[in-house]
Length: 320
Figure (cartoon, rainbow, N blue to C red):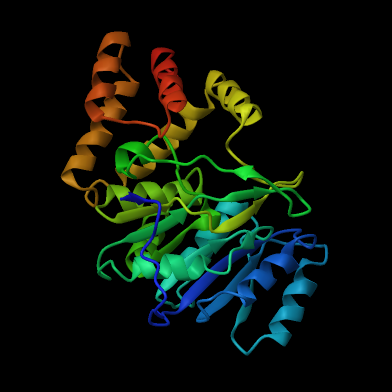
């Protein structure tokens, strides 16, 4: 489901509780602005769970300051697993102490638009609670001084498992999901690692019959700076980097990891998506002509023409 407008109205939605899953590491330069953007959210029922991965700058002092100044329980500080940002986000996702209606991933260096949570909640409230649901959005790119420098690409094709297998359309910093999605993500990463928490969330929710909504309206200011662990994925510099990674075989390695992980979820995938995964997995190991036939059969696609041309090249070179 794609739309330029979301289920966004002037009436107040029920104040569902949203747990903001914030991962920090050496974040003193920009963390304050992010915390301030939580304060002005139009949806006021939220609490922050901050997992710090061993910062030795002023990050913890900033968190403690806000914890003391905010109402009791509004900010909870945890020690992260110290195994990188993916493990840190997944540790928060599976932490049973964190109870809420919805869960929002948050980086330490962005700035949320005041209606970010409300836009997501308005859509999530339309989905039955027993169906996994994941909201994500486009973002506004800003530099280290919060000056706008552009937008992330606008995707127009429907979110689906066939897309998720080879592309993530939503940055984790925009994602908000319900309890059913949280359960899927948590249960699927108990005994093995995945490439990236947000890409995995998209694959799992779409693959297991859940609902994914991509909001074309930007909901955050996505800061680009030298310390970014993961930066914007557009522009010629980013494209050249992807080409280099493709040629070096990095995408094939990622697909190895993802398909192996998805096999653990085989019984939870819908029959159609199980067939897509089987065709995709078989195609990757076939010789040239059968590979192209099976890849076409499974229907995988990227969101843009240029992306699909790159996918064809990757298929030809057996780099997928």
